[in-house]
Length: 149
Image (cartoon, rainbow, N blue to C red; front, top):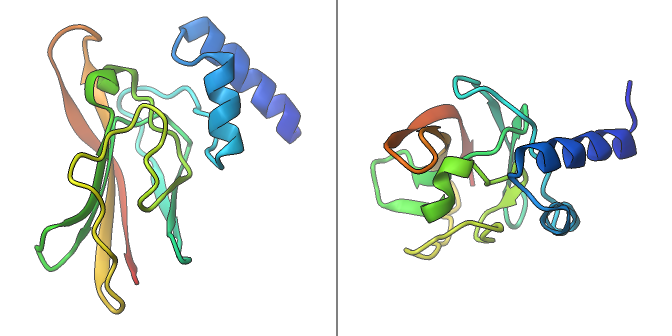
């Protein structure tokens, strides 16, 4: 089984080949607790996990880059938090390891973040951009889970 350093080296090499990330951005993202982005197909489905702590942390396996992460109360209420990649969506730059309320590199959260309410069940959904880099495309759901605060 490859060690952590080998996995990071492969991620850096892959990022440099695809041009999706610079070495500096990868190092910064890793230091912030994000996982290196794994190459994935547009149809890749991921398993989403939530580490419930003071600020829940959202991870998914495999750690494909995503274009949006949404957290909302399953009662149909307003979203707790929506992060998307804006003009960078076609690059699917959002890494696994995002903490609730902490906007990742290349992320935008224009509506801000709502406090999570104790005892409320929340749904977490990650979306991947599928389409042309400079043309038409759409967000497709690639994984989801729920948690209770």
